Image (cartoon, rainbow, N blue to C red; front, side, top):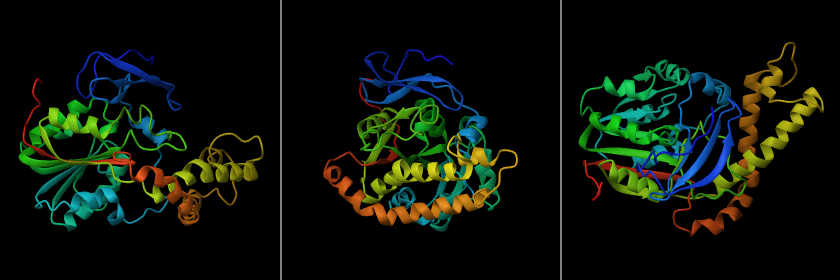
Amino acid sequence: MAAEGPRACPACGSTRGFSFVEEHRDAVAGGLYRLHRCGACGLVFAQPRDPVGAGWYEKAAPLRAAEPRGPAARDRRYRRFLGEGLAPGKLLDLGCGDGSFLKLAAAAGWTAVGADYDVRVAALARAQGLDVCAGDFASFLKKRAAKEFDAVVLFDVLEHASEPRELIAAIKPVLKRGGHLAVTLPNADRPLPFGRDRYDFPPHHFTRWTPGALSSFLRREGFAPVRVEAPGPTGLWFSEHLFDFAVAPAGLALARRLAFGRGARGSLTELYSGKGASGLLADPLRRGRLVWAARRLARVLTWPAGLLLSLPYRARSGRGHHLYALARYDDISEEGR
């Protein structure tokens, strides 16, 4: 796969005024991507943007069922939407994962339906009795009734879409006039004190959004933004990044060296999956629990440092680590579109 120049911005459709940001080589499939910034709307986007199949995600993001997760009710994305005070109706969660939010929404009075492209997590959701389909979103949406839903939520989904306008265009026929769309995704203007994590590159993330780029995109697509926020960054967010970028790599490198010797290469998962590999950490369930425990301990130990790192950013508007947007579908359009 060879990188090529951009023909048009996938958010606003502009065909010129692009500036080069960086180049990235995908470590899983070897594809070369070039990222550009649109001078018209500010979106950073990748070229090419060919969607990857399930096989890529199985290699790049294996299910971590062995690692315990915190209660879904504590997820700031879910709390923010459910705290909006919207009258419960029928809700669609695109990219629903294992169905954690669907259960919370149902408890709050919503009739909740989900879809996810990853058949592995969709199966986990269905095993809990949830109404979840697996497959590509376009095919799923074509099968739904017109104006079926009162709300659609995209929790950290839009940045994965190769063509975000096409995704929103497929959503609008199933969303009632006056219904709501909620979007969360990483803030392109967030602090990056330790660099960008490996998942914030194509083909995992095809786009990077600022508050302004997201607001203007929603308006162009016929939505009236109720609010677009960039909360944080919090001391906890910085302390978790300290763990991910410093503590965890050092600890995993030490564990690899102790278990397999100085010259060992690859992740512990890869090494322990080799023929005849054994030892204390050979059990993936045990490894997952140890990582989870280490993360919880690191939160406590590094929280003071995380708080200090967050102070210079907390008073600066728009510098939070995540974006949250709620918009009403009024089929509006900006002048001159």
